Image (cartoon, rainbow, N blue to C red; front, top):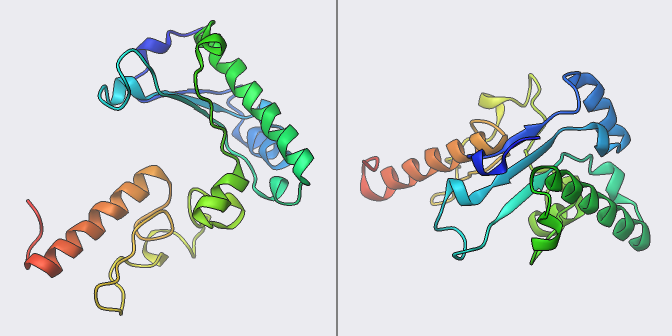
Length: 184
């Protein structure tokens, strides 16, 4: 058991340290054998939520291939099952969390595909392989004047940190092109 109020950005809960085993479980769709992230946005950004409220999220990774061909009834059932599991994990840290939830949104690989058009709901961009890592990703400045690229699919890398770095790099290039110099 841990105290959720001491979490700054988040806490990863690992069922084991055998990450190969977790990877195999993820590919089978057995999310109960995979790590869970719990994040409390109140602590990271106190002005991000209404006074007296909290914004908390719980996340697991999922293989979009296992969600793609489900019929609507099976999709809804699987989504409810995952949502219940994540709330159950949250109640290990905050026992009365279920009773305090006012709004609960659950995103799946289908949700990510619908809103981002990323194949199979991919949130981290290309797989990091020898031929798709860092310098092999599309650069921010393109051959079309005024068109720049930023995001998980572009240089320098995937994931949250790679995407943030990509946005920062691209913003600097735009500033250089518009103002003739990098922002301070």
